[in-house]
Length: 377
Image 1 (spheres, rainbow, N blue to C red):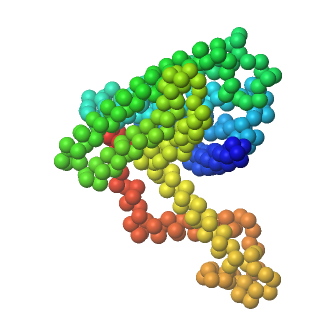
Image 2 (image 1 turned 90 degrees about the vertical axis):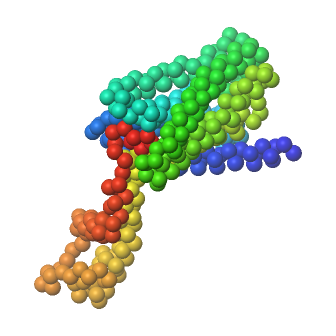
């Protein structure tokens, strides 16, 4: 019957939410840390806009556990009722802050590509900060309709509700559906058209530049196409549900599944960050090297004296098994936490030196200039 199917669907939705949270939160936190450092040292508009996009994703991810609890309880809202409105407000606001931020990034790239010399002299960080604040103001003010709808004088009594923001009276729908349509037109359709125009222009300009490096040109075009697809696939279905709901005068039953794609955008955005900014590339590279060095240190722990059983002949002889490190034979070597950390740091430095000598350091040397480039900052 329908109940087992509903249970299976809830489990799929819950798994999707968990995956989005576990992948999106650490990657966005790392991107946020790297961009904050970059903006603090040398602010440029593209990094400010990407930081704003990161904050909007974190805004959604911090409230995603509340949606997990709701889904785990088969769609029933067991948390305090005030969190119902706040969670939905943050979710919808984050989605539209993301669409506006992606549009801002596309405009900045178009201006850098089409008018590099002219725009470079007028490219000031305060403009990007003002645009980011404007995005938050517009999105949050529009999504405040959630509170207006819930506290409508003809709303359903709260004590009779077991679900959050799903059951509405006829009067509530008459107020809510036109607002959703306006959200779709003003905060999705219009930004998407602007983004589409900007990236099509960027692609045409790049393809017409014979002097551009083929590899950079290919990467720039791929990033533009990926951003457009991310915009359309993640936010398109959810906003189409606004149009369908307005026509049918009811919320579509598939609306919750369309919103899964919108939340999944928080996982895809770090990929855009990575290919858009050398700052993010360096941060991910440093993190990966650090994790590998720490993992190597932990794995090699089995060959250290403190990790071997008493009576180990090689350890008692004053030599780390398999390591090549020798100690003074006249004194006992006591491996403390401080000395272990020192050895791990030494191994990490040697590993980085090996990578540099192998030529891998060229990955960070052959970058685009951070001033005013078409795609990467």
